[in-house]
Length: 514
Length: 81
Image 1 (cartoon, rainbow over the protein chains, first blue to last red):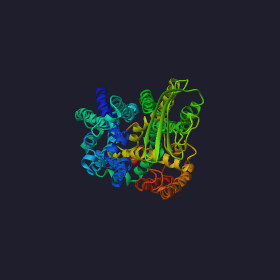
Image 2 (cartoon, one colour):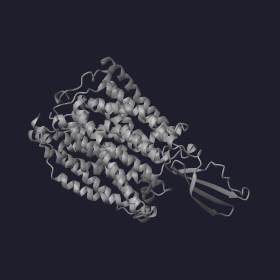
Image 3 (tube, rainbow over the protein chains, first blue to last red):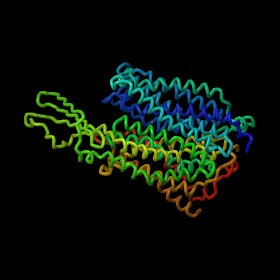
Image 4 (cartoon, each protein chain N blue to C red):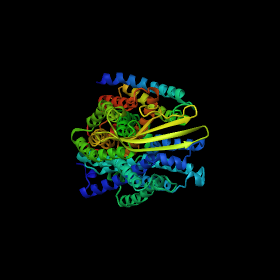
């Protein structure tokens, strides 16, 4: 065991806590913006204003696609020049500060175009900070870890992205369940609370991190005057290192990114949009699945120390390729409204609203049904009556503009859905659990932060972030297949599996001190 | 295995321009004010193509390196990097 990497257990514990809590908070901060996008849109980016629409698009897309990889370069370089500790302390301050400030920006109605401009700027700072955080945290923990526990210790960092999602889901649900929709969506309403909560979390995390020592390997390099003078050049201009950056991206992180995004975000969006499930049930399915799957990050991190990282990660990708379509087919089949309507359903509630105009009147009939096996759904029919057509549709008819929403599956199906989402998140743990140690072992200490951050954020931010957009693109091009959007993650994961299988080796680098 | 690595290198080399071609074609097809929300937005396409082009060039370089046999032996310590 190398002396420089063997830190006492108590110090290791502190290092893991300080790094993981901070990284989890950064993920939480980044997610709440996306999860509250609809509300944020109405507050800051009003419909019909072309400039606001452009700023909204930039806030949503540029933060993940452009700024995250750019942040990886900026902070990666900084981390290799001045050290891991102060760099990822800075990312935490930037992320926490910008998140808190988003919660304080007055709406468009109060300050006009300044509101979307401020929110866009703060969102870009969030993306920049996130780009610098992960590489620092993973490198920091790995450089404290003994060689035989590097996978296990860094897997604590790997839990943070999913736990950040869990906390974000939980906080938003908690706020939403304790107030009306009007109170939540008001200009200074409940939607701002999750942003404000962030500041307390960040202060605690900064306090913990301030007390930490610099990574022993970086300190040693600095003492010997062997730190890199130009990490970017050494990472990307030296062929021997650049080829490893490319291999990390195309042989591991690219596939990890799509598996990660599909299991956690696409699944949730699919349940809410394609299956028309209600907010509460779809979110609690995710929460339970995440809660039960999270320990597997640690299991696969630990296992990777024993059998190598490569096949665990590639196994997760292969299983994703094989299982995604059957799993999503089950979601569709079990929420198929045609099947639910074949039974004798009970009407739980029926509401009719009418708005009368000069030449016509619009009738909206909303009916909530319960099936014999306990599933519930809402059927909304809108009908326009005119002098030429004074009679509403018949009860036996289903007009084209019928909308089915708020589907609630019964208890058995609910557990089944939790299990299926759990399987997908276990695949996430397989690809993601060992990857920090895998990336750390690929690159030398003096340029490690820079070299591992860029492929990580391209893999996750770009390849992962493209899942919903390409899904929508494919669905528009081939509208007959509701599962066509899955071909993108399946294709990328399959390609990554092939590249990884052929080009990567399964060797665990015992010595990361060089 | 080394022959496979080299031959597949040509595949990765050719795959990159194909990806860019499909992205450009997608942009040309879908950028339309009357089209479907989000995928008709030129800003999104510009962002995606801008960020994806260097990645595709990276895939070409990866393919070129593979074809040249750069991945026959992976570095085992920092001296080799």
